[in-house]
Image (cartoon, rainbow, N blue to C red; front, side, top):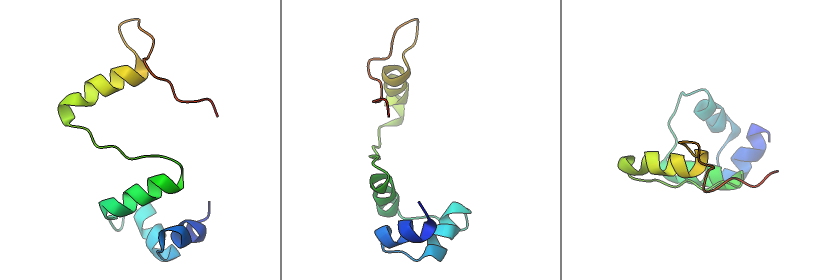
Length: 73
């Protein structure tokens, strides 16, 4: 998707999207959530202590299959 298309969907100018991509500006959390949704993703915040549990559910571990796998696209 072109920066201009992405910006239109977010209600932001292409130049702002470019600055975000280059790391010249930090987007608001609400913008990051909207960006994720535009590309059919969902941003979920979890407590730091839960990250290993979430990773093991997704990646598996100790010779176990993951409890969850993303759909094949």
